[in-house]
Image 1 (tube, rainbow, N blue to C red):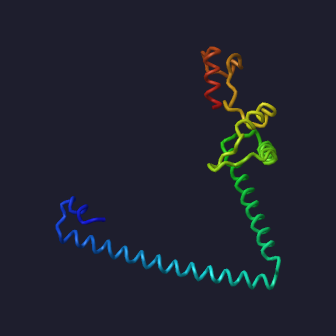
Image 2 (cartoon, one colour):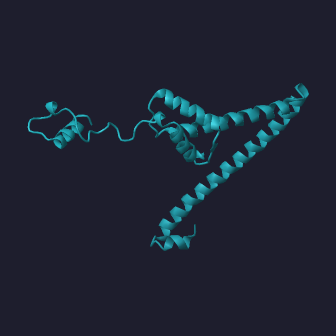
Length: 175
């Protein structure tokens, strides 16, 4: 920040000086914070190096064990991401029953589709269309209740109704 930049806002010299003093104080505080954090970081690195030397004395295989634990943790995180992506992808789908949903989710997990960075699954749309083709009964009907197009029991229709009026009345009753 420069004084000339502030003067462009039609500020007085006194106002510019106050702003520069505040800005300078902020900069000094940030510099102190950086110095403190750098010192703490260096101390932590030294402690880590000392601890690693001690661990080698206690358990020569500690590094291997730590690497294995790290790999297992990464694998668990990847699996959790995959399950989350699968759940998210299937969230908008309507299944005909809870067991149909469980079967779909189990088959999806077995398929091991690759989760993307944005939380989607690579190849999910193709998998879904294939699943709908192979097991259409697993999904709830999109249109809701069936509609009556012709016929029905005219005796139950309101007085003076025609078939089309009855069908309209029936469809209204069961929406």
